[in-house]
Length: 374
Image (tube, rainbow, N blue to C red; front, side, top):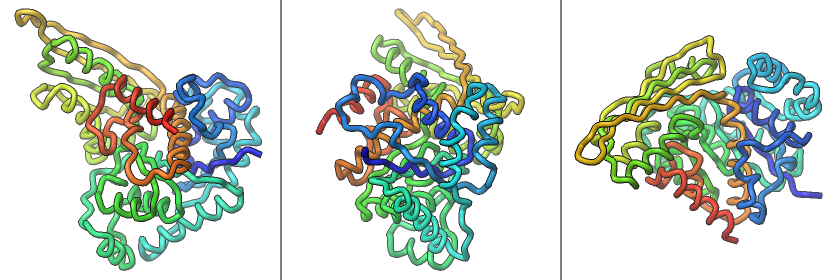
């Protein structure tokens, strides 16, 4: 029997998580793996866990059944009609592994209870490994005031000094799981949280998956640099619906996303490129998003030129195959005994941990090199 790997999702009933669970089940029924990078030949000999050997569980603040979420996503065109009937058994199996986030007087107790939930999941399914991935809503920026583990542990025992994303990361580490942050939330940004992961002997990676506009930027920006074409301004407007759009309608949450989205462009082209990224919430768009970018650059003898592009896509359908990739790759990192940051996963992120490389092709080469290194 093939060893199975648990995938613990924080935000397990949201659109991205639901599409991931439904998508993995659909792949097992023969659906083509479009968007699943690790299904390509470059990764065939890496020893990745098969997608059909992934077992899903997770935490969420709500108890809306996965089947209802699948119905909603199918009605919105995110998932194919009739898929819910085909994968009913898989949805029911995942549903039994979902837990409502615990409430306790201190975050130390919350972390312990969350870690126990993950541990029980591991034992009940006799799982070889467990990887944890945060696909919850984006948080506003948060300043963690502790820089040593002793001080943080004392504060956790006395109250609630951390945002939910940091609590999720620590719960994963306490449960012996690797941790990936798919979002731009605080989670593993503070050094003290990373120190906890290293002390636990576990790998972690992120942050803020690039699925649309920033993905295109990471291809186009190196093109301008390689062709010695100075970029003077790069402005973008993003229209989002659904839960993600509603979350980012809060200027504080949007700040986290904008910082992440703009970092790569500055690293690739320099800080003197004018322009900003704007995010607007348009509720009727649902799970779909549109990005429009305007790039002003100059050519030979200073002749001014522009490039414009429009990206329209379904956020959850773009994200779900990346979640599957990251689950398989972080499980491989666990198998190899990797400890600490995983910069080789930068291919997937706007703000990759321990890396200032944002060129998609360079990031892909680094990922493949790591995967093929035994």
